[in-house]
Image (tube, rainbow, N blue to C red; front, top):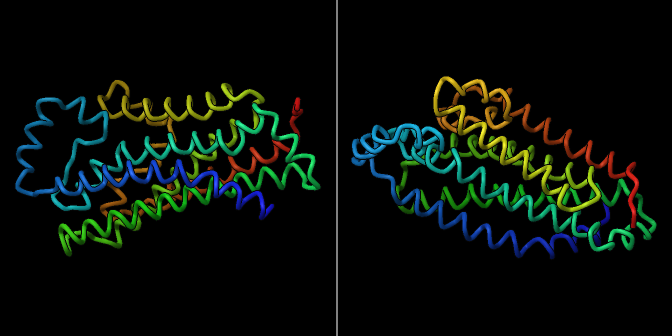
Length: 264
């Protein structure tokens, strides 16, 4: 890994990371503060009036505990889509923008191999995602303890976030692979972003009714089941598949970046 380049990447990525952290903090605080077991009946009435809408966003089972509530209203949609947008922006900063502006020629002119440069950019992206997931975990625990001391099952909450990191390792790896496969930024971002949006849509449609349930087999989001993780169920094979898939996507991206013809 190129240490100087990694440090430069960190300095470049902190601004979008900070912006998305602020947005995520707002949503986490708002959702947790809404928890009130006495409102369960009211929420059920709302879901009965709009069952398809709540099911599409994975919010059809608020649960009786704080962890169930968080898993339902945060991890079913918001904590999937918002970090995905951040990952797309970061991939654009780390890879796509260098290619579009011709700055990649400057990097490749150094006595470092393409593989080393691509690995460094991949490491910076993984580090940003990892720190983001750790931040989400910390904010959730701290605010839950402040607002509802002792209500949050911290062990299962950590288990839930281990699964969330696995999902975003896969999604960010997909975005990174797109930047390594394509020369033009629009195609690179379209690959990762387009597939990411398609996976989310498949997941939403598969939860609406039995007719579209088969779509769950076409999206990796099915491997991340926040409700099962919150209940402490043994779903580690699915989570392991996400980790291995994410590592494979990064590895394939680095390989293709080292082999592709760059018109610089």
